[in-house]
Length: 209
Ligand SMILES: [Zn+2]
Image (cartoon, rainbow, N blue to C red):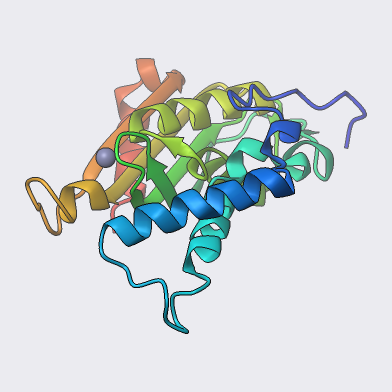
């Protein structure tokens, strides 16, 4: 393991300090959440729902933890010199849950992430961490894929990166066109994958269910 400083990832998010919500703000948010839930028909005066506004906010807070960054991504296992160029390193399916920034409703699915190492490699679990980091926030599938690909480029300086996301969007399934069962598929290529159709085929073949 080398001692080079870990690459600093572009978080594209708010600073951690802004995510700490002061008690007074939290109480105000609870009142607003209660008002919204009640306006749409929830009876907040039952044993089951009395704490729902607070639970709803806590769930939202957890679901957007990606804005806090992931310190372990950078500190616990810095990129290592493998000493040799290697073939395709692929991880997946990595399950994820994200919130659509247009409707604030979840979209969830699976990611496959691959890279062709140049001289550096990272622990496989970091690929999962990168996916979760960019999923746990308000986003769109397209940006999420770009951010995962760019983070991997920053972190390991690989020869190529491939990211494949397949997700079900509750905003289309629960409302609007009510497309139950449909999936949105997006792929993102960096480096070698842009130039090498065989490599793209190998990746897509390997991630077939
Ligand atoms: Zn949406």
